[in-house]
Image (cartoon, rainbow, N blue to C red; front, top):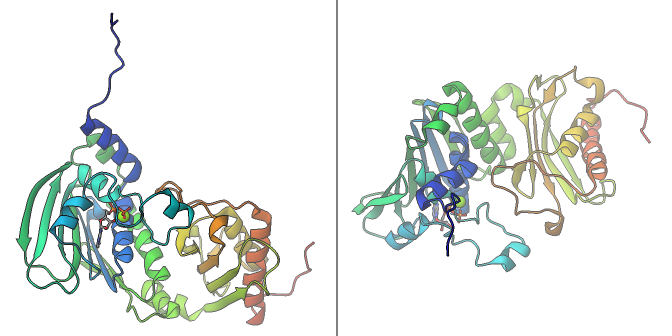
Length: 350
Ligand code: ADP
Ligand code: MG
């Protein structure tokens, strides 16, 4: 005999939209997923176009590996990926930025998604797939260049509560800008451009030089004040970090926002208190209160010392030994600043 219960299983649509909210919080999170897909597809060029902060339109066009019709149909399904086969791949350390196989599916369940793609080297037309609110509504042969162009229109059109939660165009665009900037700086060998409401915000050349990428993104004043940081294991105090490299600004080139601290662990953009505190420690009193330098810093950490299975939205990482990381970063940045005579000498700390 069965009793009454009001505990029921949610229908698939509802489940998908709830899940989508966890992956795609705002336009910038969709941009992040799409740019990561382009980089994973080995693109040499990634052009990001957004309208109204990404709320009306997000377009990411790449010249990467591309997809054929079967790939396209598979790509928008739930939990479909070409990047890993199973848990073993995760444990041995994933090299791609994505591997969860949920981005296209979830973005498409809360927007109108159009993907046009042609595999590299394939002749003939490409394929255009339209996916709206979670359903494939059309698949057609369409002329398109080699590579992939993804368009996301009317994000959250079918989840009004989330749509309402979005901030102003300026705020949403600031988040988009930050995401694209992070990837442009981390991939100077890829030509990355960002256009907002028909205005080109920046475009890197893809010539492979970090200094040149900084110039394209932040402009001449900042680029000309950057100095190189380069320290490997032998030069660093003991700790989990094997190598540090990148660029940091002259103390006089600073801003009142942490926004310009672009830090990476094994190529992934992350924020970490230990890294930030290490940087700020190195500058010491050279920076006024609440002022931050421009930093683009890459840390290499052994694969087994970082957990890649982090939530897609979380950029914050922690290390087993935060103190050691702080000391390592402090030392690396300090020695670069000292070398350029940019620090008043200070008493060694214990
Ligand atoms: P994931 O990136 O975790 O694999 P996605 O949902 O983001 O999951 O993408 C699903 C699959 O679609 C990818 O594994 C990849 O094979 C393919 N794909 C997505 N975007 C692109 C792209 N820009 N170029 C080529 N293939 C792509
Ligand atoms: Mg992906």
